[in-house]
Image (cartoon, rainbow, N blue to C red):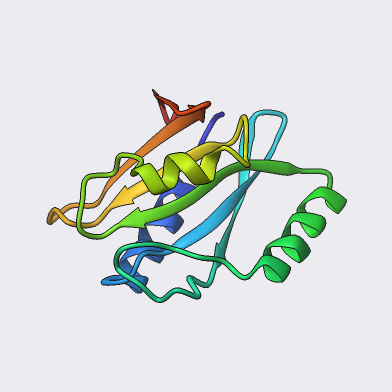
Length: 129
């Protein structure tokens, strides 16, 4: 997926706004290019995990698909650990095959953004181009 830097910056800004809690949201893509960032509320309001309202996510996914795009990535932040998928992330990813996982690490002074594909428990880092 091609990922414009302006969208990466939006995700980082969301992560910094929601710190010390994790942030979360989705990225819509069209023809392999990230198109829009859609912040969601972390209803868990936790620095250790994120949770989204299922109905809000359903409505958002419907709007994205009705607009001719598709889900390209789920993003969230790690406020106390490196931006690498946790076991919780890996378990959650089984319901979203082929979806990239963008994680923003906010523990260090400068935020770090990384992306992964998670397939059947196997984590593969992918470049954000």
